[in-house]
Length: 311
Length: 320
Image 1 (tube, rainbow over the protein chains, first blue to last red):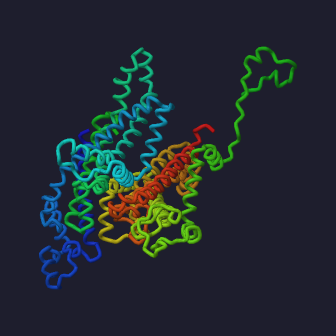
Image 2 (tube, rainbow over the protein chains, first blue to last red; image 1 turned 90 degrees about the horizontal axis):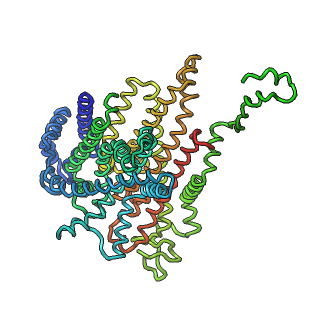
């Protein structure tokens, strides 16, 4: 087990390193070169350009530039944001908490899929299961951004109000502002969890030990609790990790639609205003979190399921 | 089964012991007409799949015929800024007999735009699936068939791509280099091939372990022959299903990217792109909001049902 963890950690570190290298070259491959990316002002004179090149170290050999970039990245110095004129780390830091709120809430929504999946499995080949399966297929075919937009338009025409930004006037206001975006963001997770739990429970229900438990005369309640659920819910841990990158990407869309002041909206604004230092830093952050999510999911799987450890 | 010697001699009424030990005749089995025809037959017998195929086919035909339909049936074009009888530009008109789905903020007929946008969205979807299949199948075959270091290399590549947050990279790429439909589709496809590779590799590994492959090798068949005759047909069925799912995901993904404004470049419109304007406009013009998303929903739903139907059709273990 220990060796497995160490191997995955090294793999993740290498991945992060690869992503950092790729972004370094990405900026330099843009048309207009790194000057475009780092200077963001098309009307500089030649002299100013030369001075800026010197200042950003663009005249050093590529290897030196690369090492300096790595060095800076490791101490989380990603420069100053163009739009905010503040260090990038500060700008992102301000937005972390709202995104965390939204993310946590949407995870909670996603976890509602567990009881739903169990319900569907118990009512297999009956109406309950058919309804749930129909809803999951429908839910995975609908574009979430369109659903959000439609909800806004609908709410507006029905009650003249729609959630816009964070609610600042007390807990109820906060709640009614976060509810719709969080449900939208958590929808994908909800569907994934429902499908997954349903198929897991169905598989466990067909196992011999469940038949044995029932044959022993144990009440259904006990069989469910001690045998079925305990085994079927093991892989949920891993899904939580895999959900993280999906929530990150989904947040960009959801926060933009509902004007939620989080990292997703920040990324969108940075892209619209060509704020390259901010963009790159967020790419690093996004990749880092994605890698972390996958890592935790894989390690978690090894922890909860002894069968995986010895492969 | 050994023929009873006395029955073979054709003696009169069967001996009671013979009657008791005679085996009931086997159920009549329909002779197989080949994998493809059996699959088509299975598919045709599933009403849901047939309906999905019909609707999807209808959508494709209508989008392909968009220019003809716009010119001859609707008498408008996507760039035309339609005018009211008084001569003003007809911006934000609700649906009426003249404009079946209303007009947008620039006065363009919504239905016409919907049809033309469908062309772009479907094209991107198919292109992405194509890229994903080409890269994914070749890498999956190599990884599964040759194993060893090739497998490790492919897996490392798969891990790398999976761990990149695709939306972030797509947005940044779109900001650095303005996308075209082709470049957008190719880059998109680069995020979809790992899924295909995994499926293909799994299928190759499972086919490789089967007895008939061992037999072929024992008879001296070379790698290429085994690949072409045994592995490829099995892989083809799963690739078709994965391709279908890729088209659906690509349509959804492209629409999200275009909605944010980083996908299909503006003058060209796609189903996602049609709604990337200001939200204030849409709050007062709901007829603009519902059609594009509804088209995406119906199209993607049909593709999902189709893919499910195909998967079941290709699976000979489900009873006819």
